Length: 516
Image (tube, rainbow, N blue to C red; front, side, top):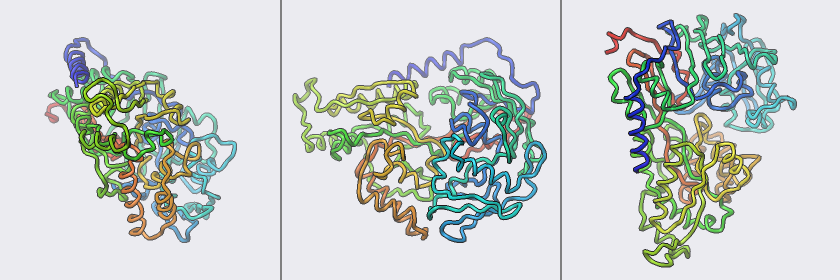
């Protein structure tokens, strides 16, 4: 773990030893300054799907439907969603919801938003979620009817998406108008996004006057600005070692909450060695996930049992687990025919390649995995890439093993299991990037997609998770613990499972004397 200790010491030196003065980004003490990693690509939520942009959109727009703490779909702009027949969903809108320009949200805005995804000329990666949508129509001013091509019980999850005003034109990409708690004020590229509290927000005006989202690409600088008081809040966007150092500060607080982000090792089932379930199980036993969580993540994660997070209504804990056990790993490799050729000598049983992004944490984690596998006789070649290059290789199936992370609401509905592990969901149709194929899994997922009995659906997804764990369809590493580092004067911090920015609408500042 030496690289981690070195990084921690570096962070401590930088954070503790800097003696310069940085100017606050906001003069109004009731404006909250939040450090973010990058600016938005654009402000149209139908188009932009990158993480930074979506977090900013959450503050400007309101979703048609929302997700509760159990990751079930609940009211949003629509106060009700009825399912009168297998292929129809009827949404009843809240009355009196206003856009930032003062006009009332109606069914025309909803129809316009969702018809965008049915328009062949409209370009958006979100359109894949609406392949099963036949049409969307306004029944009256406050009622919208969604008609599906065939029954699909997970369709309501697709409605967890912001609504834009009817007729939003090309300038909407840079000058958004939403119904959310904050109005767009300005965007200085590579510097900051400024938002003002919206007094007519349907759920009540925020207690603060607005937000300044400062773009600070370097995580050490984000930590430094927290330490110096020039930034009020950072949400998830600093490394565990820096969080550990900042937690000792007398003017900062660290708030944590269980998250949904899931890190895993993807496995290419077309590879001759990895096609053998005994090899995959050996890999799972050989990796010390607890050490990764305790030392690299500094406890800001929990060892994962599978893709679905523990707070999902469909999650089952009754699956096979692979606690760190090198002796079992060696026995399985022996059984699979990969015997140690020279005892304690340098020759490996097997050679594999792991691809990861070039972020510091991912490099450190891959080094630990490399050492774990070396201890059971597997030589692991770790190759690091810029994210875009890594992702292109993963989509193309150009890998033996890789590490990536599923984030946020992507894992909120158990239908994600179908998209990731059904044999018909290989790219570009779905996310089965490792070419996993299991006839029983396919049957169960097909049944679960059309099952209307909640208890039976839960049973089907439970069996799916049990088989996936036993077959090691991928190697689960950890599920993230979300965190917020904030000035002690900040009140109202509470995190959703997705680690999003929406709670900022409840944040306020108290006088320093009251905060201590």
